[in-house]
Length: 118
Image (cartoon, rainbow, N blue to C red):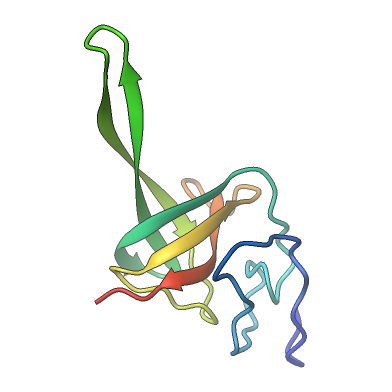
């Protein structure tokens, strides 16, 4: 854990993603803690933030139906750890990255807020 304000390089470049300006002492934070990000990098909208340091992110995607020769819209909800230095709220468009399992249903962490929602 780092409390001196040092920010780790997580090795992910994405338009609009920059390290948080505030610091935290959360060990599960990718910027200030010891969690490494590997695997999927997804973008979605925060729909719930009622759990302690955890948010529910919903992402929509298209799936092709060969029978009807068209696309159908689908959505999935993913639980992600929300470090206090990022502080995503419902309506925000966030970037999440896959990590080791942090809890029973949490294997993603919020990397940053792309766009603040209302």
